[in-house]
Amino acid sequence: MLDEKPRGRLIIATSFVVAFMLTAMPLPEWALTWRPFWVAMVLIYWCMALPNRIGPGTAWFLGLLIDVLQGTLLGMNALGFALIAYLVQKSYQRLRVYPLTQQSMVVGFFLAVYLLLSLWIRGISDDPKITWNYWMPMITSMLLWPWLFIVLRDMRRKFHVS
Image 1 (cartoon, rainbow, N blue to C red):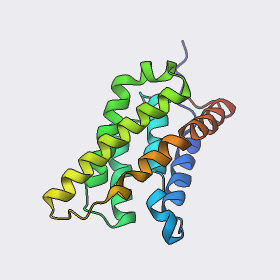
Image 2: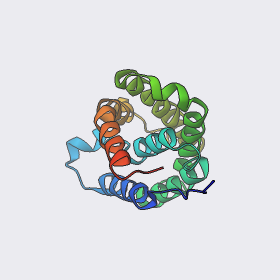
Image 3: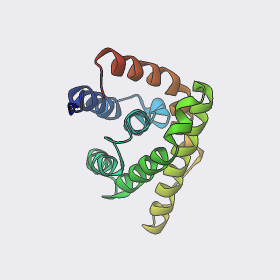
């Protein structure tokens, strides 16, 4: 029996780089509160598609990069991303069979947990300036999930990422 090496490292890395670029892309002032959580959504997809390769360790590293990119408290996004990756790994078999609309709702739940954890950390660090706009990226992420899922799934199949 031949041992197959995991394939598609470049595709996975490229998808995360594109997600980071979309996160860092300048937007008009009115659109800043609607920016989706690109990196978190790509992380959710890869944790669901390849749970044995992408997990809390990768999520922690990506979260630290987001912390540096956005200038937030170091470790805040890392903890949130690791929690998301853990939750996805615990439920990926069920998530895979859900229709895309139901997956969007579950992704919204994961992102709500992430936002609540971030809110708790901000409260501890004495930064309670939160309005209803704080929750808007979760809504746009839920709305964009079906399209992101289809694009990443087609890339995974085309390049035989395993």
